[in-house]
Image (tube, rainbow, N blue to C red; front, side, top):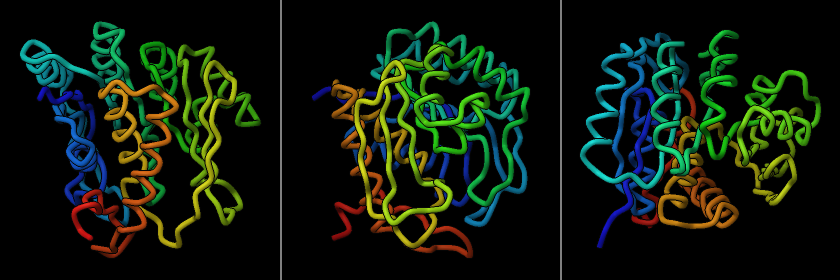
Length: 262
């Protein structure tokens, strides 16, 4: 049987909780093949990020083009982009790969709170990359940074639609103050298409956003409709978090192999 291959753009996390490691684990659990392109090397653990070094633009492009020339792709998932030059490279590649489904998890800050994107980088994401993206998966804080003129979630979705993204899955994990349930909302062209609620887990997790975006990319790569893929990706992510463990001194790691750990 043919296996759907997903091109990944993301940073390497040596703790294995987030970034490319999280993407690969998620895609494998969801029955897809990962084609990982490393956008940055990081020094981080389960507590926070200490250092990020962007992959040189030429090497970033060469990694991706080697895969594109070699195998058919079914989807693209994008995580950490660490430089303006990287934005340009990834945007050009994504425009070239259209109409493949392209999922962007806008990694703007680390789980420990350290910022990972400057205002200039956020502006470049909006103007250069978002027009090539099929679906964006920000948490509330990230959506607010990408749509600073908006106040409500609907206004954020409408602003992001004007920037060129037809779908937005905005998660409520960072809602202030936190509620007993995490409410996630899927928008299409600024109109709500799906609202889901998940029991809020007590721990905080390293790589939850990567897991959600990669699971969504896997569903789209397998040919699922957006609403179905979004529902299944949320279920996979929540179950992975519920089965997670605290492996270090900070946030918990999701267990993306939970189906095989019972």
